[in-house]
Length: 465
Image 1 (cartoon, rainbow, N blue to C red):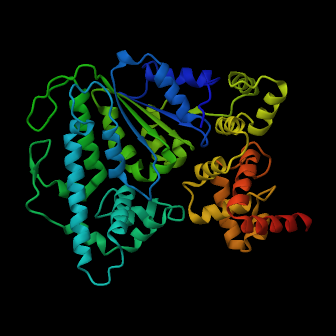
Image 2: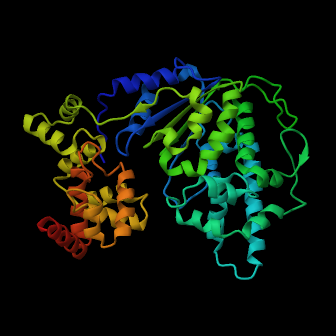
Image 3: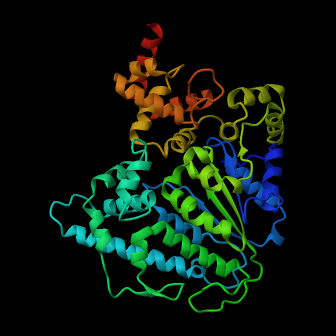
């Protein structure tokens, strides 16, 4: 897809620059900057533009970056591995980035060992019904949501919304026989000297509180890399100073897709350590929703560290016209059509330009649009989306006519209200964005013509009634 020029966003750009240049102070040594807005509004584009153009060399950032990824509940460990593998900065050696995080690597090994022992013992029980992959996903869910193998179910049941949770998390609630295994699994041969010099079993620490154990390990690794203070316990070693690394920049992108996995780790365990740490940290979180909406702990525990959120909106008509000119669309008619069809929404502008470049709506382009907007949806969500594409107004009455079940219509309506990436937020009633609706309908027409005709007939009958 062609990359469009960067226009507008002056206020957002300046606000993000102030944070990265240290001109925006939070509580302690931590500043949290959220960039909020629906998918395709340009959050990542804004951040990358500022990182490319802002003079950050003298800031000496060690940068860690994690992105939501297409996978069924990959888990906290998956994202921690992604974080340390992404590290960029003056590490001062030719080793892979993960070599600079030895404590974190040890805890990951202990976690993997404990998980393998639990799965092995569960396999010896009668009536076990889950595959190894399913058990791995369930254990990840337990750790991510509960923070403790021993207490996961009471805590998870109290605070998690399982109606919205992936199916594998709901399965974890049913697997109560796995928890005693995790609580008592022992491997006397697996002993490590931890960072405080005491002889303890890392598996015991992971069992008691996995997110806290990971947070301690990662914090000490970062302190060894960034800190100029040599009195930090580092497994008995006095590490040399790391020139060129003075502070941490932690970037969490697609937060809406991974916050269930890392909320407890970030809010309860890791970020409070950065707040009290002896080095400065900037945390940038990109997501569709306000932080407090994803978890009240952001405001309850970290409100004082948060800069004013950057809330992304579509481009203005003036900026859209400037973008059209930069892309070679100079006539008033072309500019008007671009604005009418996209309403300044950056992702749709990019699709519009691709259509012009390719000479029209190709099947491949329509398929990419479908994949882009449905990749995080459940199968049921995709079916609901198909029904809403044919409705001028989405409400419980129209959904009942399309789906046939009042109960499912209620579920579908609740789902649609939360789907900001497809819903026209400027409309006085609930409906799919017009630009998106036309292209997703076109995709459905060529990919499943029979279904397209059935849904169209239902919608036509609804309009005639």
